[in-house]
Amino acid sequence: MDNIIKEFKYVELIYKVIDKKTGNIFLSIEYPVGYVHGINDTLGKEVINELEGKKQGDVIEVDIDVDKLYGIRDESLVFIDNIENIPQKYQKVGIKIVMENSKGEFKDFLVTKVDDKTVTIDGNNPLCGREVKFILDIHLVRDATDGEMEVGGMTDEHPDIEQLLTVH
Image (cartoon, rainbow, N blue to C red; front, top):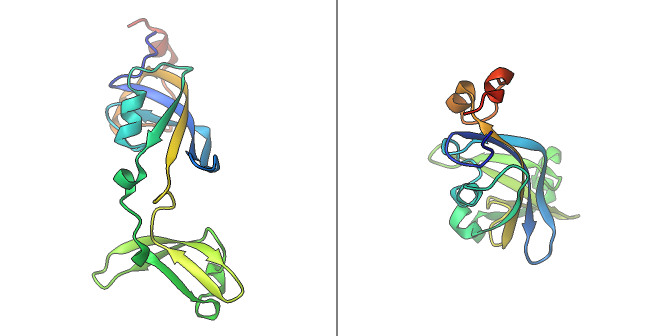
């Protein structure tokens, strides 16, 4: 069976996003994430392009231009308010707050700092302004099922084992 990543292959991988300067792990996905190559680019075009031609069992590192992916950090999206003005349930680092602007558009903000007097809320993507790399561990590469092709990734249905064992 052809286990090279190319268009219409179902791929499962785990990955980490690491700060290149400090080595800190920003995100670690320990359970395999599945997508259909050429249909779903949820990991970002840069990552998908680097996966092309790799095979099951490969581990690759991909440097990411975060400014290109998420935009340049915008300090006008950072708000510091007195702790007494913020409801108790939002006084914890890591809590997501959805805010609506005057145009009725919604945006996610994250509580990034809490001290005795203030709460800092940031609307930038947490990776903005950082240099990061993805480390991707490719667990599985196989032909995608019709259901996986439809949704671009994992489905609740299990693939037909007979179909997977058929030599293409």
